[in-house]
Image 1 (cartoon, helix red, strand yellow):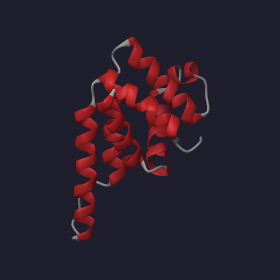
Image 2 (spheres, one colour):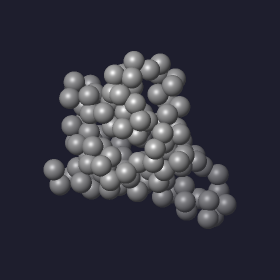
Image 3 (cartoon, rainbow, N blue to C red):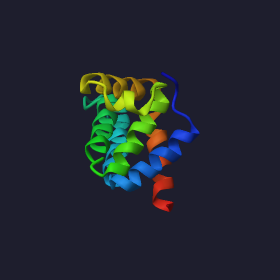
Image 4 (cartoon, one colour):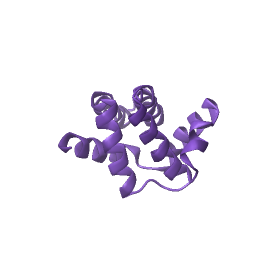
Length: 122
């Protein structure tokens, strides 16, 4: 698995626009910022990883159009260094683990913020 890159931002922007999940991403970004504030104040709350995995799941659940579904497979295939059909045919548990790993190993907040900014301009 590779790190997310600039090309992935553009793929995600198109996916966000087509799947119509901009609000879910914005809500997740706000929640992660609240989590930052809670940690500074030594309060417990959901961890950032959980917040971003939840946002990723909302994006996945919103991929009901064939175009959005194919865009999702293409995005994940690039990051996971697989073929889109391999992503499509993976067990859901494996896909969820890949999403968790991507969220842990990358600055997902910056990635999704950038992608949502681009999507608003498309």
